[in-house]
Length: 246
Image (cartoon, rainbow, N blue to C red; front, side, top):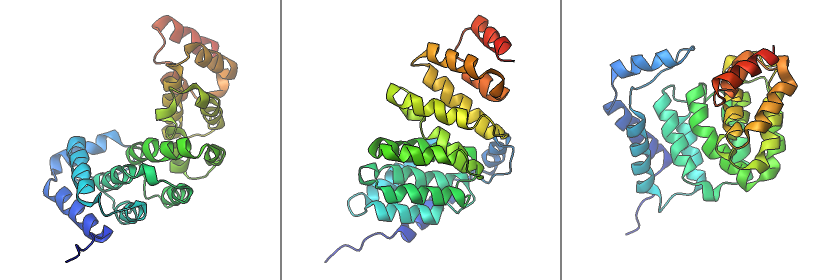
């Protein structure tokens, strides 16, 4: 007798059931201190979320393909709780061998609809999923550069954090610096912090290049971005860069 395939709806229901069972109202309330905007959470630890995602993926890995994982995200991403979004993102990331260009445009749609409507969800999702798409389809980089001008703050942040796991590869540095420069005029602290974070990580590979970039653009760089970007310099160099970029 043939085994009935587990549907995305059934797996989503199971995921939500487990998250609700593990919910901790006290921890959920504590999560809010990390966000300026109001967020909802079950209060489940990052470790438990990753274990749950691993177990759920294991239960369907032999029968599911990319389309099923995308359908699961369509069900979980609109949920308000951070953990539901994270489970969807982590399961989808396990199908990266099957990633195709259609997924790229699906990602843009999710972001534009504000399904990933907080910095944590964007940061869990984009380095793994968008980053993998960039590696597989380098031509998408030009599309992502256009995201820096998108009116949606989550699309803009996604264009930045997508490169976080690629900073050790110098071939991506020209794109990283161009994207960082592209958001200098954005008055949004979540975009400014992400840009500084990306520059700091790129600087680990070439501190000299980062310093020259910061000094060249000087006062055009938001101070929030600058302070994040210079964190890996020693104190004397940080003070010097801050002074010379006023």
